[in-house]
Amino acid sequence: MEYNKIIAVTGLPGLYELLSSKSDGAIVRSLDDKTTRFVASRVHNFSHLESIEVYTVRDNVNLVDILKAMEASAGKLPDEKDGAELKAYFTKVYPDLDFGRVYSSDLKKMVKWYSVLKANNIEIKLSEPEEEEATEETIVEEATAAPKKEAAPKKKAATEEAPAKAATTTAKAATTEKPATTEKAAKTEKAVSKEKAAPAEAEKPKAKKADEKDKPVKAEKAKKTEEAPTEKPKKTAAKKK
Image 1 (cartoon, rainbow, N blue to C red):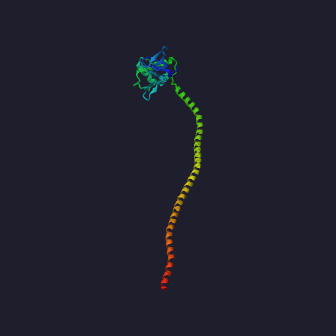
Image 2: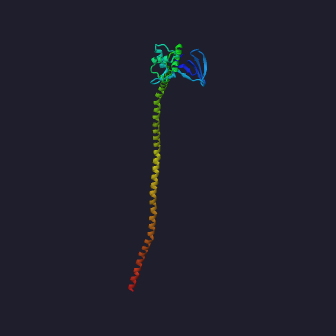
Image 3: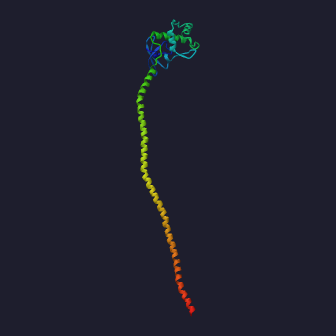
């Protein structure tokens, strides 16, 4: 029987071993007469001895500290019915008790509980199974997490390869885009040369038109020059007459 399974039940004398708990109560066994019974939680409250604290003039202490002090004391247990004897006993055993808040009924209860524990050969100590299980779980988790940490560099390598692949794809895209850009440049140069050639060709008809306009003027001048010699002989002929 372990100390962490011992409970006190309100409204019932003595101590009990918690056998099983349910949503509406618990099955307990009395340490006095060893009878088993169901105790409803709506009627009674349960208190584990490990969770009980006692007032002192300093910080509160666990009940185990008081019971250990009683176990270490060589004095005889006091009479439960004598309040003065109870106070004198605990003043020797644990003088830091706050007797202003720890009443005679509490002292009497501690003496009864100590007697029942000793009668059932229950070792008075705080057990720590949860902490031991927690440490084992953390060790197992660390052991399982170690391979995951080794696999992490592979993920990093994959992430480093991804930018490299992206860089190669961009480089390929750049090389494929270069011919397209050169073709566009050639087309634009051809368009510019055509635009430059278009005004030159447009100026040529203007020059031709100008020549056509000058042709009638030249023809008229030529006619005048041809007519001028014919008139001069007529004037000389008249003088001779």
